[in-house]
Length: 149
Image 1 (spheres, rainbow, N blue to C red):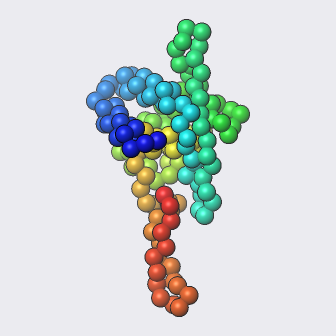
Image 2: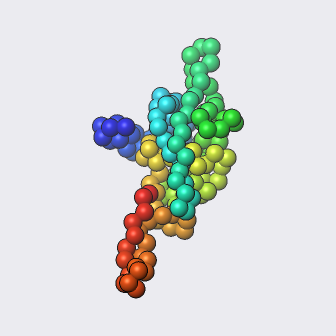
């Protein structure tokens, strides 16, 4: 994703807040569907790297987006209702989500990544999040070790 797309996505998150709840859900689902194929990566756990994935949303015979999101690394799909449940949880948390588990839904590790890219949530440091850590160096001196978010 280039810098212009990133700016466009963050504008989208701000504009979502101006809509009524039903319009928000429709706009969010349309945006998620329109960005299918976007490379994403789960947040990982501890020292373990996240898993790269993409997703698709199929269309019905009339051309409308179906209510399921299919992740490339899973056989099961995420329903639109599950996506919206996670979205409203992120809204309830003020957009500050310390990790996928806070979304409280099936497929949260995938939705967390998608929501971060859309600007719906802002990751924060907290329990279970990687960030700058102070470690004792070989010579006994304290050093800063930076970990990727």
